[in-house]
Image 1 (cartoon, rainbow, N blue to C red):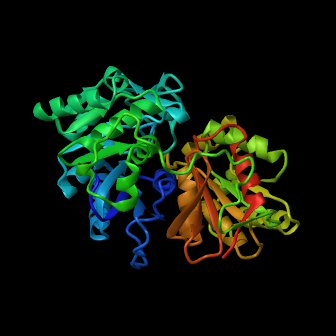
Image 2: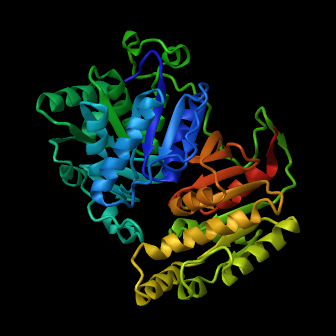
Image 3: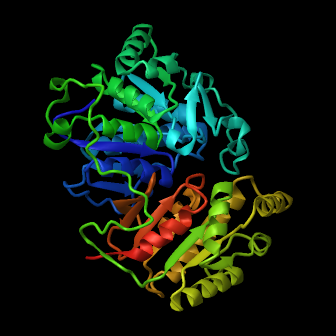
Length: 468
């Protein structure tokens, strides 16, 4: 799947997915940009030095037909931008419109087959027997089955992907455990049988690497489809020579011990002091979170022990309609946040502190006749406007956005259409700079991270400062 030249193009259905997957290309030494909205409004050229482009296609919450078209348009844009290798990023919890996106991208790019491996073992998401499991539970039976914006109703990938209208085959876990040659043989068998979508089981990072090597070794054009886990594996198994010299990959034979030559994944409890950074920022950090995910709610509790906590009155916001920048509750929250930041304190602005509170907010939204997803969208928009009000009035050491909708709303409000990934703060959590602005931004998926992840992110930003 490698070529002599060209760029890598990543099509993601939301912003945090574009960031955590683009991060895997950055880790392999490729300068990587994230386009936070599509189509981009500025239309500016992307520098030649940028070798990987991740697009937030914004297709997760679109109607079925719209998602297929949007993903196809994103693929066309990347092709016109000089990309010759493509990756379709899917959610490791199967939220969104995956069947439609696969169908749209395969048709647009003229690729033969999609190999779908959404497992992300590092985050507790694995695929066994075609079923996507989160912490050992079928995903539709987990909290993601009750997701406010994109509830998951199907855990069995072959059943879900039959909606593409294409023939689906499956590769069980025994093949991945058996090594890349076994997976390659299974892919060839599936192709011979007319399959155009192949689901691959994976329970370990080694399984994903076996799948990645088989994809790399395939003679026909394949669209890899997966989470940040498969993207990391694809980058990990690229031979060093092919990566650095851009040689024709067909002349390099993959081996079972192909080395990982990218930078190691280092926890961010202490900064490593890379080139272009100095240690010891005195500027405070602003964290905004609209994520209802229990993982993020727990992280907020840990961070709230050291940072100033600003809780937005969701009830007041919902009762008074869609919040604008002059909304009294929003203005008050912005003032409280600004007071803390100007005093040199880290500040976290959130719309919820507990799952019970999230449930009450959703119930209030239903009583007010709001659609299931409208509550979350209104709150994300409010947080984006708050971030815009605060940015520029206080010198920030960085901005952290937790949750995909929140991150997108923040980037729309600033605005910040282009991000350049500069570091990995924690696994699958990138630090980026907003192109054209003096601002560092960390985007974190609502379901990612340990209980102390937000605290570690803030500590990292406090201990490092970007130098122009």
